[in-house]
Structure formats: structure tokens, C-alpha cells
Image (cartoon, rainbow, N blue to C red; front, side, top):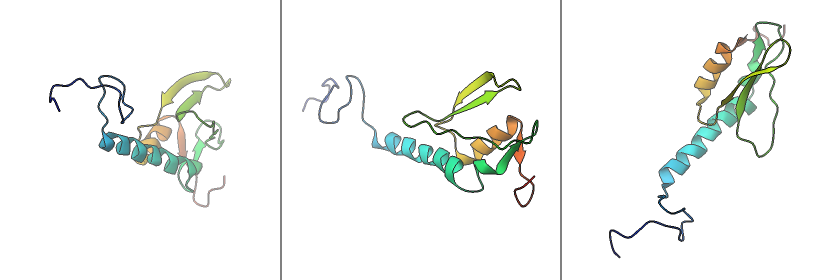
Length: 110
């Protein structure tokens, strides 16, 4: 084939000008797994309480949506929304702490 041929749609399903990169696709899946681990595994997201009011860190699953951290003020008004798809598990712990949550005391009960 011609080494200067134009990239375009083909068997790979890539749009014109795009290059299919399996390594990046794998990385995206791996990073999504990091978020899933933080959200679903015991001792991760479920281990935090609010410093302000002692309420547990709440997670709402919305099928088909990319993961976001949504922050609310005391009047339950949204004040910030962050896309977290690319965060590693440890980065998510640091982010949650930076938003006013702390680990639950030993035993997990207040």
C-alpha cells in the first residue's frame, strides 16, 4: 500500500484522521476499572463521612453516564461537578478528602 495514504474509516471503524491505538483503549478501560474499584469495593468510597455533618459519602449510580463527583453546599445546591473517569483509586481518595470528607473511625460507625 501507499505509505502516504489518507487515514479514514475502514475495518477499524475509526473516523477520518483518527488512528486506532489499542494501548490507549486498554488504558481507558484500566482507568475506568480504578474508578469502579473505588466506588464498589468495600473500604473505599464507603469508608468516608462528611466533616461538616457526619453523613456518609453518597454514591448514586446513573447507568450509561460517565462517572462524576458532584459537590453540594449545605442547602443541597450543586456547587461543583468533576469528571473522574481518568482518576486512579488513590487520586479519588485524595479528592474526596479535599472536599471535606474524612475516613470513618475504626469500626466504621459514628
